[in-house]
Length: 546
Ligand code: HEM
Ligand code: SF4
Image 1 (tube, protein in one colour):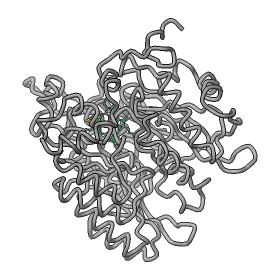
Image 2 (cartoon, helix red, strand yellow):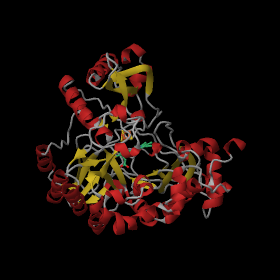
Image 3 (cartoon, rainbow, N blue to C red):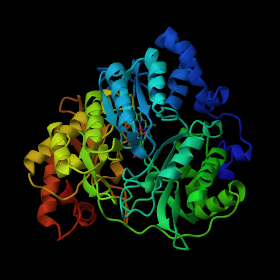
Image 4 (cartoon, protein in one colour):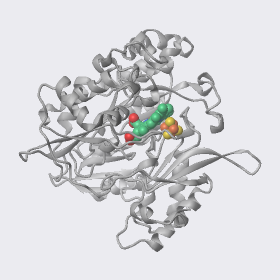
């Protein structure tokens, strides 16, 4: 394959760094920055931070400088990093599987309140992201988080990021298996392991045994999906190579069955293939999906089995298709007869104060178990007095039965804190669902609206019914106007597809509610009985959608 020679694949002997990020990782491993933060930077302050640590290795501990306040989106592409960045950090706390005890949540809440101006975001990968963090406070923050078994290790960077898992793992009656032991085994053994701390790029994992696929295994680098194996016992179907960003790809099945005991071995094997064979020349082509696109699943499986596993994997079945909503808002009965109560935040935005209240409610009404979801929502488990809890949550503006619009709207970090952003997102998303609730009262078809501040797709615009991708438009006098490119009809599951982009289909942010209202009214008028929005879009004439 001469075309791929010189892609910086370690396994082929290309060890010389071919770009700056690779050089930085070779010079000094990302994990080594922790001690410098504790010993040096926390004492000497922001100005003392080596730029290679600040803009690269800090990510290995979930630290990312936030956008300086007041810089408009039109300046994002023209300013230098030092002009865009603030002296404050975003800090991502990893919550593998979205599983939190009340004590853990209360600790995160306290950190947000004391060190992060009381701002907290539940992200679409089940993490909690804080803002306004000062480097001086980071050692104390780690001390508190680690004291309750949480960490920020490898929450960002070219590493194994948070492992997403079903928030209702272990409690739902209809799951294929509770994947918590496998998820924990991988996280405990391999997160922070120097064997996997220098990957070609970020690496996202999903390990889940639920039947509604709320963790979106199709768009993770590795997805282990609960299935019944060849002999009828539960295990996992293995998917690799999914991811969104500017070049989205669905993961592909390798056709292999992974019995539960082999999950850590197989996870390490796939991650090893990525580390050793992944392309390290261009950051744009460094994700696992590009290797898979060149190799195909068969070759990938052969290399995995021959070079990385103790024994080949048996063939296994595909998971059954699921068309139910992939979220966990509302009340679900647990197999022990108690209830899991899921509620909506406001596009993931919350506060330390509110998180502390949620921790308290989980103790008062449940057993102190809380979950974050991949849809920027939360769940309290083990509830008996559902009505009592629902009333308390409602009083906090945390609805268990939110409108379709509030339930289905997520938003990325956006212009408020993100240096790559072009438009504002969180407040825009909240405005949008408020407007739609007012304009289309009683609308109860499930619709997802994903608001993104730039093409990187942290809020997954390609897989939403209505995906909004921020960009700058031009006003009548040539001025910059916040706008969105619209992608319609994206969905995962049966016949999954990325949203369609119509030529020239842009709306200004201010007109976005008018536009969405118009498209949804057209859907209500023209849809066939039982027809979902994505199916309607697939057969719609262009004029119905513009
Ligand atoms: C090259 C740059 C980036 C790319 C390609 C990118 C892409 C993505 C993608 C595809 C997701 C995953 C969504 C999912 O699978 O559920 C994600 C998650 C996320 N991204 Fe980014 N992103 C980039 C930079 C950033 C930056 C600079 C920020 C903020 C300052 C950011 C904030 C987030 C957040 C908060 C999440 C939720 C994920 C988590 O909890 O790990 N991203 N990103
Ligand atoms: S989509 Fe763009 S603006 Fe939004 S968080 Fe990701 S990088 Fe930032």
